[in-house]
Image (tube, rainbow, N blue to C red; front, side, top):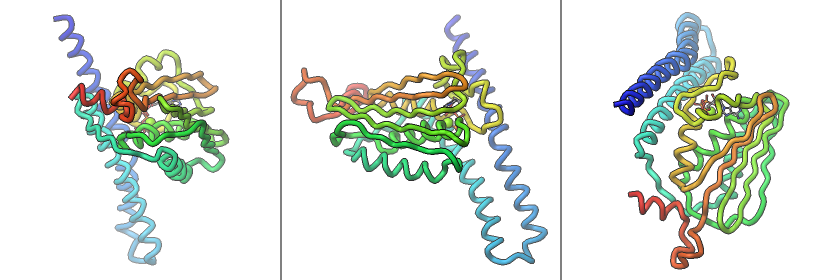
Length: 258
Ligand SMILES: Nc1ncnc2c1ncn2[C@@H]1O[C@H](COP(=O)(O)OP(=O)(O)OP(=O)(O)O)[C@@H](O)[C@H]1O
Ligand SMILES: [Mg+2]
């Protein structure tokens, strides 16, 4: 009985976090769309095409942002139900990371720098490309979002024959110690975020995505100094199973679990 009461309490807590997140985070883009459409309605007849396009682009960007948040809600829901689809395919890690770095660089603050470094040889291995993108995009976007304008973000890709490690290090606001336990829970946001927007879903999705790859994620952080997230994903089965040497361990684990 105590267990089910606890579970009930957790669910109520989750529901209230969900309501509080949606009412906060959807209000900003909706208010912006409302404002832009009002202005459009009254003044656009005198505007040239370019200005009209510009306003429509702003509406679209806000809608995209809301769709993205809804996608995250659906993904985290699936993940919590253990129904995250895991579809590993061979991936050129280096190319993949370089493309991602380029994409993130476009969204950097004016004086933020992203330094990408590679250590070791990355053997071709299998990853779920979509989930790996979730993992790295979330960690890198957190690093930029929770860091001041003039700061450096380090993204290290470290490979050896057994595993690959991704390290994302920032010089941002840091994560208070009392929040670190709940960091990977859905909708959890730390008490030092101020008015930086966010749903608190990114890391919950990251953790589940790392786990379906058979990997692990750790965090090291100090308030006011910075944060480092480290993700390690095993590439190959232990030597004890030589017939599986060419198969990523994550695939084997999924096969066992499914
Ligand atoms: N690099 C970081 N530096 C400081 N705080 C962080 C960092 N990464 C995460 N956090 C804290 O952890 C919380 C949870 O992160 P998460 O990525 O799950 O959600 P979010 O960033 O708030 O929302 P979203 O990812 O949907 O934009 C954040 O709200 C923030 O308080
Ligand atoms: Mg985030």
